Image 1 (cartoon, rainbow, N blue to C red):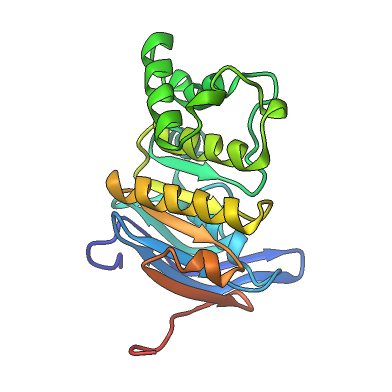
Image 2 (image 1 turned 135 degrees about the horizontal axis):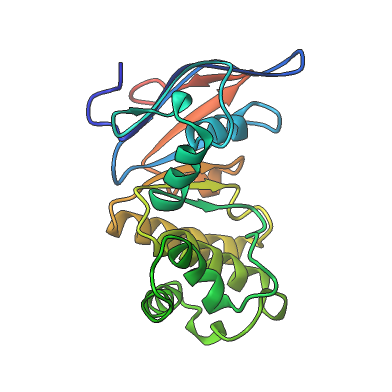
Length: 228
């Protein structure tokens, strides 16, 4: 059963890679506009949980429901379309397309969804300005700093107004000052657009930007005790 009011949930998720269990009955839920930090040491299963929730990989068993739809039974093409239209992604190293300018990178998801070039680039410019990197719009990723590149990646993730944003170690390649600025901009922009944010991190300073924290250990999700 989907937790009341949640936009995305996972229940009883199991995932093995060979004989190694990555998830062992994990449960998760998130509400619109909520930022949930998923904490845990390397190898705990937190990135696998994100990938299952985002429909990137199928769990071996269990249920993933998004807005009332069961993701685990959707064909690959429908899950891919959903990731383009409803989900946004920010990864540790940005994964910008090196051959495109920063403006073209931010506009790319919109263009893939059929938005005309002029309208897509207008929206892209607005998001670059919002993330405080409007001055790099004509540069390519190799010509800007890591902090600037990650802000461009956040702008790209949010430009399509996703209902769920998946951020996997979004500050892992940045120094503390740049990391804090990226997280401030990401969290504020997501809350303003009422997007839910699944924030995978191993850093408590990054998790501090969330509304709620959960911990993944040995493939299971543990919530903190109330009042602690």
